[in-house]
Length: 453
Ligand SMILES: Nc1ncnc2c1ncn2[C@@H]1O[C@H](COP(=O)(O)OP(=O)(O)OP(=O)(O)O)[C@@H](O)[C@H]1O
Ligand SMILES: [Mg+2]
Image (tube, rainbow, N blue to C red; front, side, top):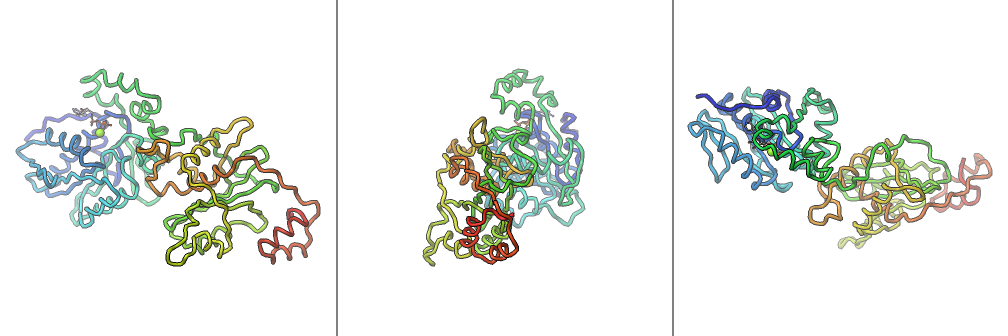
C-alpha cells in the first residue's frame, strides 16, 4: 500500500530524529501536530506490535486536534479506532493510545503501562513532574527504539522547564547530552516552514501579525525568550542580575522565608542607603523538618552578620490542633524568631513589580548571580487564569522563592538607615565574649562596641 503523504523539511527532521528526547517547538501553524501524527503512523508501520502514547493536556484538545488528524490521515484498511478506550490499532499489531493528563494525579492512569514511544503535543501545557513521571513509562523488552517526542509552542505553565531542558543548552538542531546523560535535540518550527498552511491560508500570517507584541513573538516567530502569560514581564536579566560583591557592613540585612515540608526557600537581602535591595544569598531545599530548616538558615548566616529581621508569612503562626504550637513557635524554639509579613498576595506581587521597575529615587531590587533559584523562578511565574492579578500557583515548585521575595517586598516600605560602623577595633577578648554570647548578648555587645571588624 502506498501512502500519499508529503512532509515539510522540518517535519522530516523531526521524523528522522533518533535522540532519546526530541522537541519540535516554535510558531503556531508550523506543522508540529501534523508531524507527530505522520511520525506516529510511520513508527507504527515500521515496528509491528509497537506501542505508542500520544498525549495532550485535556481530552477536548486531544479529540479536536490529534485524533481528528489521525482519523483523516490513517488508511482505514490498516487502522481502526476505538472511541471509548481512545486506542488506535493497526493491522500489524501496533497500537497508539491517545491520552490526556488534565491533573497532576492523572499520570497514575499510566502506572503499569509500557510504551516504546511517548509523544506530548503542546508540551508546555504539562508540568515537569508529569513529564518526568510519564517518560518513565518508556520501557520494554523488544529491540525497538525507545523515545519521547514532543511538540509545542512557547508559553504555558511549562514554558520555563521546557526551555531549560531543550532550548537553552544547545543551538537549535544540534544534538546534545543533558546533565542526566540523556541525548536531546530541539528542532525549531516556523510558520514559513509549513507551505501547506502559508499557501492554503495566506491570511493566517496576517492574523498572527495583528496579535499583541508578546503573543506575536511567541506564536508567529516561535520566540522562546518571551511568552504569553508571564507574570513578571518587568524581569530583565541584564538589568536585575549583578555580580556578587561584598555587602558593606552598615547596610540593613533581612532574611525572608517561605516554609513548607515540600520546600524551604530563604533569601538574604541587604538594602543599600539608596534603596536598592540586593538578594545576596539564597537557600532552597525540600523535605526539611523545622529543626533542620532552622539549623540550615542559621548555619548559612555568619555570626558577624547581623540580621535586622527574619520575615515569614502569617500562616506560620497558625496553631497545630494536636500540639497547640505554631510553626513560628517551633522555629523560635530552634533559635529563629520571625517577623510576620502579610498574606495579601495581590499587594505583595504588586510590591515585587514596583521593586523590579525601580527607577530614580524609588526602591528597587537586584539579584546576585549566585542566587540561581530566584533568578530562574521569578520570570517563570505565570498569570493565574482565574485571577489575572495573581500568579498561578502551578507549577508549585517554582513558587517558593518568589513567595519569600513577596514577603520582603510587602514588608519593606522605606530605605533602611545606614548603621554606624565600629569606631574601635575589636580585641580578642571582645571577640571571645561575642562568640560565646546568645543573640541578645551579641546585640548588646554590638551596640556597645559597634560592628565587629
Ligand atoms: N505535511 C503536511 N501536509 C499537509 N498539510 C499539512 C502538513 N503539515 C501541516 N499541515 C497543515 O497545516 C496546518 C497547521 O499544521 P499543525 O496543526 O500541525 O501546526 P502546529 O504547528 O501544530 O500548530 P499549532 O501551534 O497551532 O498547534 C494544519 O491545517 C495541517 O493540517
Ligand atoms: Mg499543534
